[in-house]
Image (cartoon, rainbow, N blue to C red; front, side, top):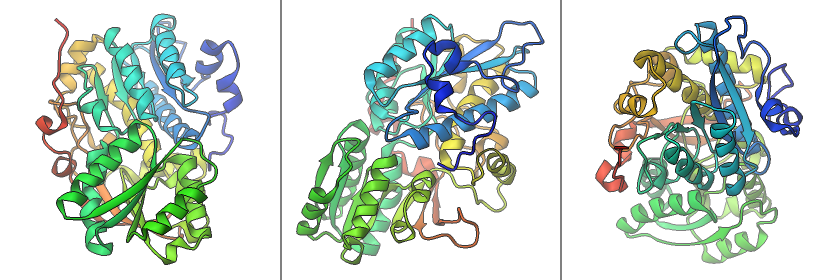
Length: 417
């Protein structure tokens, strides 16, 4: 997905070799600085490097590795080199849990990052909380992660589904109308996004119907026929990764783009790149964008990613980058690896500008550990000038305006005795 074979791009064969611990994890220099002789500090990362979310997961890994390179250049964490051990959850809950346990028990990691798949992220959080390991959910969006299933040791970089749906719902209602059809992946993330949208739609007096679609579905014709029969003003496409690519290609092949608008919470750059021009349509949110004139450090980060991948930096590159940087910055600030101490320090912690790469100073909200990022609302279109200039920001909404209160999330934080 635009990732060229650089010496340290994600090479699936390297990652998936049996003998996982070493093959999956030990990256050669510049990631591991062995000359210093101190025991390295290890960060474990679990993401679906195979399956429908492979492209976005691999982008997170690229961002995480770049952060690691920067951190090690500046002396690591508390003067010790840092290693990143990467495991493939294969988009499977059982595998994700097993890999998380292996990283903690056998590989002795100090921190865990992951998973893109919200269902896996929630299951991983049960393990990390039991083992008292600080856990950053880089890219799993379902509300309960920082809501009803919140945990003292879990922090999230990407938005909650409430943040994304609340940021764009009123725009979709105003522009196109109140009759919607949902195309929703049938697991934690999809259910959470649809619930967020429906709450706002119902409050506005709208109506909806929809289809729950299994992950990895190749043929959307039966669902699109149902959507056409309902005759909505907007098709809300909640599918992600390869599923979204396939469903949007078929949406335009069926000519449904002439009959209804399309939009939703996320249409990520990895997916926009993978569809033809006529499917580069609709109104969506972006959780980070590479073109933010006047925002410090964004151009440098984008240039660094472009050098590695050949394309503009994506929100997923940023998720991976922020996840690793957060751990290093807070551990260096507090001078400890103690998870409860670091978790306390991260509550209310504002990202420094060179990590935030967005307007304002987003912070991890103390009550639920959700990062209060700016949500970007806009329109997707075929490339204009730059091949990756396929999204125009129409509105930038502060995260705290759309996140709802901590009470509304249902998070009741329990700290270890």
